[in-house]
Image 1 (cartoon, rainbow, N blue to C red):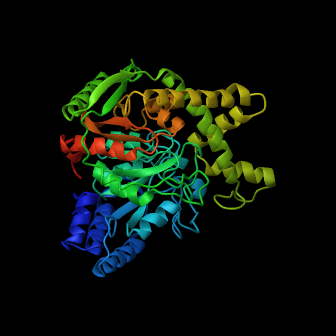
Image 2 (image 1 turned 135 degrees about the vertical axis):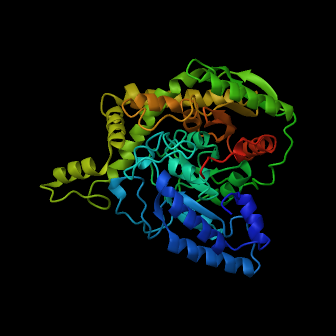
Image 3 (image 1 turned 90 degrees about the vertical axis):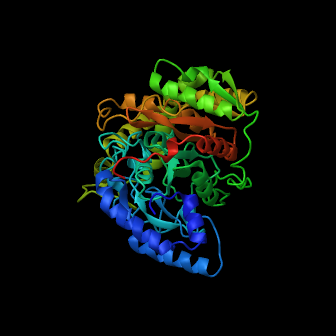
Length: 483
């Protein structure tokens, strides 16, 4: 049962080959047995899962249908889940039980999805390796000595190890797509505003976006269908009709114009990954795609701009954690200042503290214009580059990451080296565009991903291209040894 995709589970439940309760019990037992190797879960919600599974079976027995009805999933541990710990991977929120469900959690529950638990993540989604979590690093099931990517590494590792078919995740600078690439999954960051952020604990509000992680594009289409839609509770949610993502999966790619930016194939890209990307391009050409070289001239400025804007927003968002209203509170504070200092010093880890300080500096008097304002101007230039490119092509293709997954601890002493691994992904967040990573091969036994970017609200086009590619390749079907 654990090898089934979300689509296969939907068909099996519809044909009454098994019940949601039976499947849920199998996967819960598998998580209990195998997750100690991976550390991909922070909380297991066994009681809730069995309750939801029984309810889903009853709904099916009464004639109700739905691709997510009775399907087991997990949520990244920054989606508020009523009555269940929502920690953001941080000591600061270790004792926080959300009093309400995030919109994404509520929508998927209404569709009948079964929540198996909350997955591990980089603390407050700050990281590219899932090593900054207060609950310990997550391991990559393809090689337990390597990182699974971050910040959604727990969701990625759990799905890649076949502990469950799909999971929710979030992407602020590549935190869905990079873990997908490192663990041989398909991961989709939707257009900014396509998925509600209400109840999704914020890192950088103008960049964060929730999305699906699964093994196939078909499964991502099913999960995104349940997540997407306008939410009046979220002021950044966009009131745009949600198409049937599964309906367009088999559209012909004949004549599709795919742009390949020349800036992607620079000195920093592992030549073995470059070769796999070229192989992917050839496969898409066989399916009728037309390849064209394009340019994104301001890409070189994206990383410094991102690492001014994101920490600036983080310093503002995380100021609410002060030891007064909720979250960690220090013992016996001497006064209010001592309460703030020690509660934050004890509750936040080193990476979070580093980004808060960078952000506070960039927003401080005398430096706002020199750093934050300039970074926002670069952000606009990055967006303009994409708008110009999409006048010439329908999709942009390139590597998801410049290197395969590195060894645990390898970049801990050099945060900037880890930041540079986001070079291909952060531009989509700066511009608010949808982006997808899909499996494209292996380097030294470690998975590699190819990234696709599309114009606003063209998630269906990305899923279509990825699905057609997966019908003609088998990279996404490979399973890590031992799982």
